[in-house]
Image 1 (cartoon, rainbow, N blue to C red):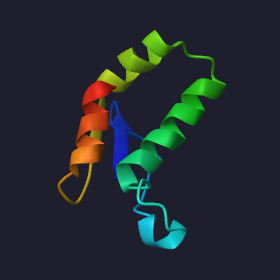
Image 2: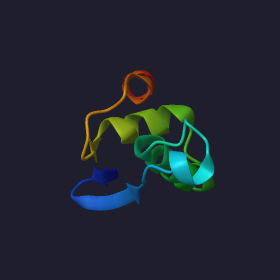
Image 3: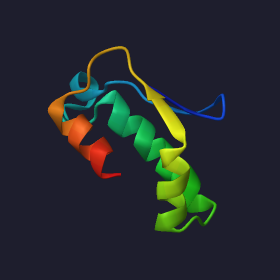
Image 4: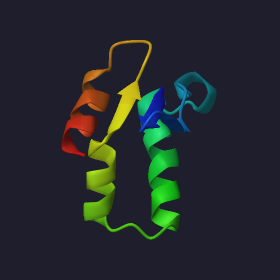
Length: 75
């Protein structure tokens, strides 16, 4: 999974469910964690994070699972 903002790659993630034995660590969730940690360190408010994320594009190589799709629809 990659997240792109204005043509620039800003976060990546990969499926680590087998590696970590944690069924929640899909590529999309990992990329979001990386991105939100970056934005949190810069001091963005939740409203600023939501605005910035809405301007981003998220690319995956497989169809999203229902859990990831639901989480992304909330953000």
